[in-house]
Amino acid sequence: MTKMVTVGGQFRAHWRDYYELCKPRVVALIVFTAMVGMFLATPGFVPLGAFAFGSLGIALCAASGAAINHVVDEEVDARMARTRGRPLPTGHLDRRLALGFAFALGGVGMALLIWMVNPLTAWLTFASLVGYAVVYTVFLKRATPQNIVIGGAAGAAPPVLGWAAVTGEVHPHALLLFLIIFAWTPPHFWALAIARYRDYAEAEIPMLPVTHGLALTRLHLLLYTVLLVLVSVLPFVTGMSGWLYLVGALGLGAGFLGQALALLITGDDARYAMPTFGYSILYLMALFAFLFADHYLPILSRTLA
Ligand code: HEM
Ligand SMILES: CC(C)=CCC/C(C)=C/CC/C(C)=C/COP(=O)(O)OP(=O)(O)O
Image 1 (tube, protein in one colour):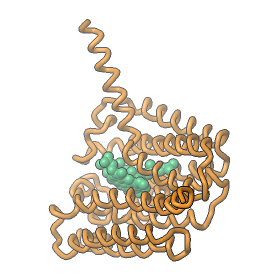
Image 2: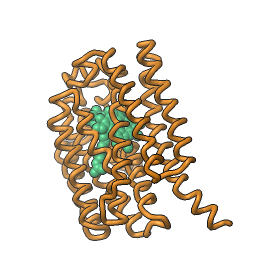
Image 3: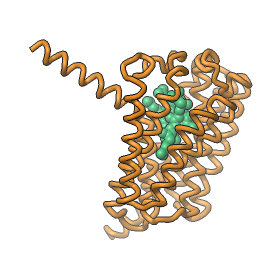
Image 4: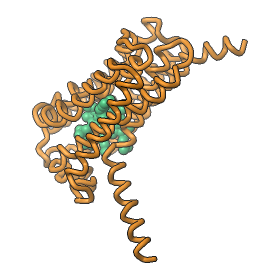
């Protein structure tokens, strides 16, 4: 009896470790933005196959990238308070097992995308995986404070991937969604980097607050938020989205600008940095929910009329 409980307990611990390697909450938001890309790609309903296999394939590849990031960053993660409890630095998981797991996820994800969706989506997703796990994690993260600006392109790709899964093409409207996430990434990350800048300094990772100071990072955070609000209006200006989206985008943008301004003016990182980071996640989720609602409400009201 005792043995069974122990075996059960161990299995549970391993399952959780593998799950954590996938950065599940980040992947969830990535897949949500990909799904919205799929919905916006068509005036009607998304074909079920493209939706299910596209979402699953993108999720598996993003999780693969996240797991590779854990392997490459094992030593850096061990040096930072925020990350030293992860499965590799704590020794809960072996590096080779983690890498095998990452390749298995990526392999299954790619197979699904190639055979059940289309090759364009598969290769764009592969480029995003390599962009995050290799270009950003192995090189840029350790090389330049612009790491997350350039590396942000990998995380901004999912709506383009979702769109391509449904239509087999890269549409200019999908690129607008890419631009939104691309402009959102710096304020998203720098809010956290300000809050945790001692971590990055100790790990000798050249994040902007470490190399150029907190004041300049707060200013850059605000400037990118202004850029984000401007870019977020483009779906309305180009006729891709309507008034519901515009009102939502401006309301959410005002909230983000308020946070970024409060951080800059007061310099009170303890009070504003983590709430700004939390708001950035809520912002992206809600902005994409507005894109979705704006796309389907007119169709719904026409159907009901
Ligand atoms: C290069 C681009 C990005 C960088 C450098 C970055 C950085 C980070 C970091 C360091 C964290 C904290 C993770 C932790 O504490 O475990 C985080 C959390 C998060 N990020 Fe990002 N991020 C990027 C792109 C994205 C993208 C594209 C999305 C989604 C579309 C996203 C969604 C999230 C979410 C949802 C969390 C919260 C996770 C949690 O609570 O466990 N991030 N990000
Ligand atoms: C295939 C596809 C769509 C790939 C998406 C890429 C992806 C998973 C992007 C997430 C970005 C992210 C969480 C960066 C943080 O890494 P970090 O190492 O700076 O943060 P950490 O210190 O918390 O590990």
